[in-house]
Image (cartoon, rainbow, N blue to C red):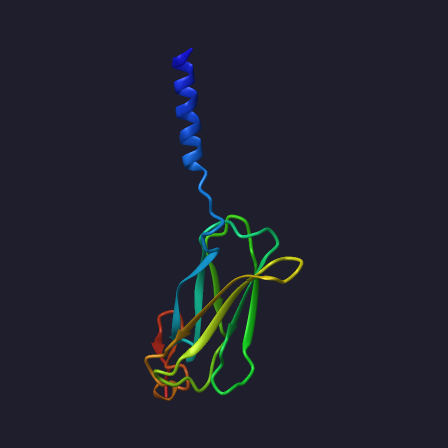
Length: 151
């Protein structure tokens, strides 16, 4: 009988060790992001990627807001939380007037389904390494092979 008791105690101990209490663990983190310049279309934008660190509440929403150069209003984008999804990406449309080494703040909020209560808030500043004025205003390439645009 003690043999079975030992096996049951060991099993329950292993089971308890596997049941990690995640209530104090953050829901999400910003896993990367920054400015990009797409040569094919001669557009500059910025964005970031969000990684869930534990299961997100069912029906919750991820809301990203971006500071936009030359605009007092922020751009707000939302995505629904999806069970099992490993990454969420947020990206601005084409921007104008981006300046080198100026902080552009992005904020991520995880919002509860019914109440809209903030479950998590993250802020991060992104910097461009180049003034947008230094980049081509028209696409310098065309086609699948990125051939130079004829003058």
